[in-house]
Length: 455
Image (cartoon, rainbow, N blue to C red; front, side):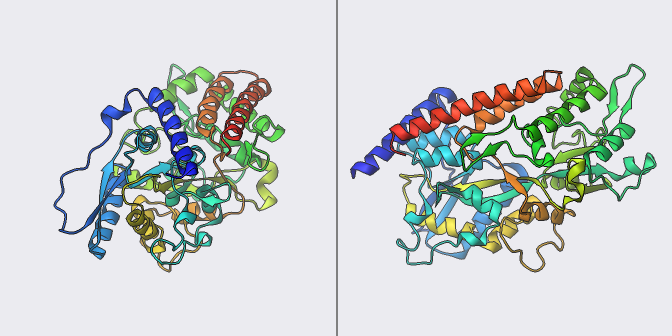
């Protein structure tokens, strides 16, 4: 084994050991390949993926189609919970799957641990086919697939966020059901008009609350023209003036309805998202920030729901600016280093990155296409009637992505705590400065680690 390869694998093992310690005996629950009748002579690949239910059925249909369209390779898809830690443990232990579906926040740490192969390690050398063309991806999607100039993963669907609104609630309240707000102040007016309370002062119907569902605590500065991280300087910027403005709006919303009352209301739905009792699907929330997949759940649990989707409103001073901001995130596909069949994994990987496959998967997930261009007919008959709204945000030059740093998961967790503190009345500037300092300290420590390891 070459010295560089040995060093890379030892790095991966160190990361895996840390993940194992945090994941509490993940070895005991690593998945095993199901018994499947495989045609004789096929090379069998193991593909770990996090999706289950309808999303799992959609990716299984893609795998089945691949297995039927050629006679050399057979892919076994295994649904895996807690895939981030289990995959790193398996890679570090020398027993990885051939392919693994990850989140984009995994990309920096997996790349820096050399736990996944870069695409330029293939690029036609192994099988004589042309390399992948990264320009086929939408620009923002492409940014998520690269780390320090090298493509480390492929895309496995993408999503953006937009404002869902219950048209019946708008109509019943005397508002135009087809005219949703472009500015934050108009959103506030509508939200207040649509909010209902019972005779004890408890919220019975929320117009709009930023703490529901609470999954994207750092998204709000985007709609105020700000970002929370600067990739060029590797700097956390969440305490900048526009970010402070965004969280002051968040806090003003909490104050308007009462921090305790609005928190109590949101907690009622913490375990019912994406079900018949989902706050938006059930009609308990008139408006909500959500992803395109909501269309799937609306189609399943309340197909007669009369709703509308629009880009999330921006700060009033930005309304006439023409910008279309938003958050873009993606699921990604990686080839673990040390996998049993890298050449065959590469063949399946390239199949997954074709426009036809990506669009089929996007349609099944009710999501926009991750590709720069869409095929004629992609939008026609799409399961999400507002997919073009999400697609426009994904293709917008103003769209943002999650912080591309190995500390993003810690950043997100800390941001959630800061959001909660601000919601309950903590000083916004003090809280954000404390958060920025803590995150920047993690960024510096990670950079120092990489320097010691020659990364």
